[in-house]
Image 1: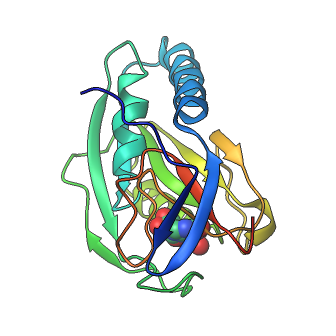
Image 2: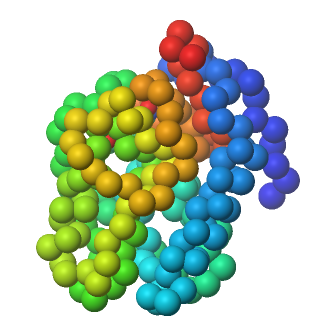
Length: 188
Ligand code: IMP
């Protein structure tokens, strides 16, 4: 598919957002993460990526394609933010993983770690299935928003405590299809 250039500003639900991370920057960092994962799992064996839906579907797909060697994928679905710009603090499971994770090398893949509650929840759930190893990856992380301690092994970008959309991240379910990441204009 030919690339469509990402615009500098977009409007979503009547609010203006400006370009924050362009497509090339995102993809270049994902390639680095893929190489790092490839090297880390060379001895261990193929990892299984568990993408956390809905937000991480795009990052999971690109991260998987950035790993040259064998790897598998499955998905875990959590409830979303709803229409708000701040986390409700409530994490609810909507769909469990289908794959058997016992003895597997699992990497949980999130779009963004904000309060950290979602990542903590998924890691705790998966830890009960006795994986051989368990790591976490996220495209974005907001260190200043952290409410729980969660170690993330693969981080694309640490960002300020800003509301961002695009590349899987939504505002009231819209904007996930944007190829770049945008920040609310009044915040950026
Ligand atoms: P946490 O549980 O507070 O860490 O939030 C994790 C989830 O909230 C992510 O998987 C996103 O779906 C959503 N989220 C957090 N920050 C943002 C944002 O800036 N824009 C859009 N969604 C966000």
